[in-house]
Image (cartoon, rainbow, N blue to C red; front, top):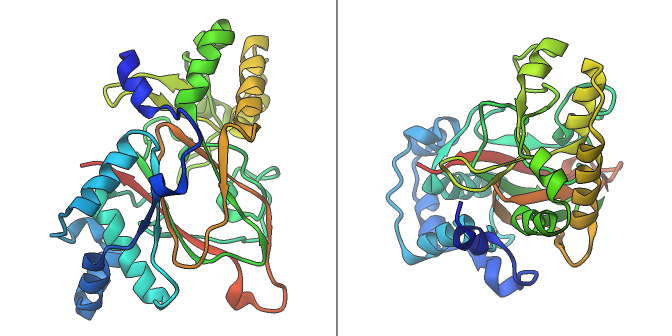
Length: 306
């Protein structure tokens, strides 16, 4: 991959809000308002069969922001819409960007289910814990290009979104930790948590792929430290010292306030990020114990460019 292409992904500075915050375009709110009940059902239940006819400069700019720096956008819809209306607006935005994946459901509600990912191989999205910096999907054979998140209810305390850039990390490691970087470009085992798969030492060993790679789609970063460490523990393998150092330096780089943005999503916010080079995190959160109706709820989608 050329240095010029990588440079288009890197952040020269932390992005300003003017670079990534957009107001919802009227075409989307107007179109969803005029949908019939049959069309709404199709959009939510079978979005890839829904033909989107929305094409404008606003949508084109979203594409540009997602494919290169800053690599993410935040769409403000306001707080005047019902949950159903917000879900339809969100679904139309996602479908307009590409095809949706149905592995967890086209639109997967991210809520605290009272589970603990450190005790059972489950997605961190089912808990209230901090996720750690990661990209979505631990499956060797599937990677979403875009992760979408709609905020229906932000919750009582915490749950802030944090975003950082793996292209910047690559440059940092290349200049200072070249041996560790080279090792991180080799296949590395990951724990198996995908629904419908068998979690065993054999399947974990087969589920190996690099942290940094340069496939036809360009620069790709795939990371979640917990599932890497869990894979080594379950298979009884010893993690190389250079890999541990690389992971340590990755976490240090991402955690620096100079290298990440922190934002608390509000009701109606739609966050879209490039899952190939934007790494995200979430702070731990608490819900209001007196009102389950206002518990933190986000709606996640996995999208691939057509």
